[in-house]
Length: 464
Image (tube, rainbow, N blue to C red; front, side, top):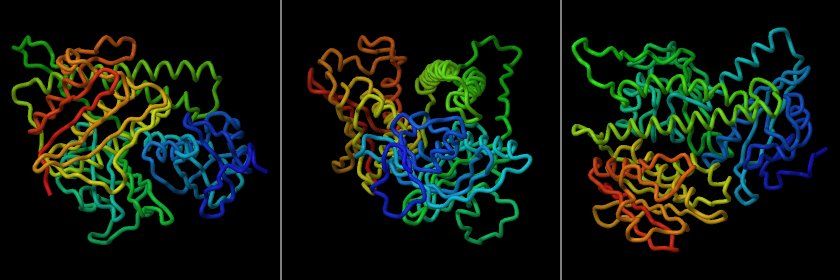
């Protein structure tokens, strides 16, 4: 019996149970036994999806704009559930995604299941908040890689320089047979070691695409239960210099703030069990404040870095189309919350250029985030690719109020916010973006007119 009607009419295969998750992460419709499992995990129909592993795959599918599937485990009141779930982004239906349960197995709960459930919760937090992530093609070859962890910088750089090679070439899998291709299911949850890091890591692979999981590639995340190593911040005894925010203070501040955000997110999303709405609201306020503080720290640290006379970037061959699609995936939920439609390059559309993928992604996230903030509700933001001879361009265009000539002249200045207040911005993003673009031998420019929106264009050297 369905709750709220049959939610998944577009399904290409028969499902045992279906559900619909809206753009806010609420399970608004569900068949049995999915509806019962939602209630037994402390949720309700119309409330936040309370089943940790289903909530995570739904969130990832919406963020990436891709159909995803994987096995899942969940704990009911008296049964342990295992099965296979598919999540299908549902833009035509107003955002969110469609869930389809392809298989379902229920077993009696045994002693110790609570500990196993907590272990699964920790695993889902690892997937949702990874210290290292990468996009892989259908053969598990590296497309992109990024990490904020100091002891994973070497791995991120090696993968960026080795695009196309299997990700397993860059890590050590204890017990694995050298040269033997391994199916992704055997690698999901596998322990691995990383050169340059003394920590133990676990690899998680989320398959993309259907009908064969992984046909559109994978999202790889590496997580460790061990804390990041402490940075040696001891200054020379004879030095009385003010500590560097980027190199010394930012790492010291980032870790405890990240920990607060992670714990608050676990409370707000009820990953560890139901809590009263008022406490979930408090947790949401903590997350907003923590993310605002982290953004300020990152912006000021970036400013310190890009303004340094010896600042450089590592230029390699990158796909601007993939960077644009990833940026839209990251900001998709924010855009949907304001009724704004992001129009990224279509899947498969590529534009190759010389740059540093992480820095290009940083610029595009800032440009698209600004476009969302400045645009009216129920409007569109377009991201377009263009090549003119030896120059590759990616343009972010919005339908906002536009900029007059005086505003265009100072929009890239430090701390310039064009009269905006209360939105949490630092006024540093565009200044940093232009410095990064020029460090990559390119530029960041703007074209606009009052009432005609704004078009920010990142230009880099094109490559074949």
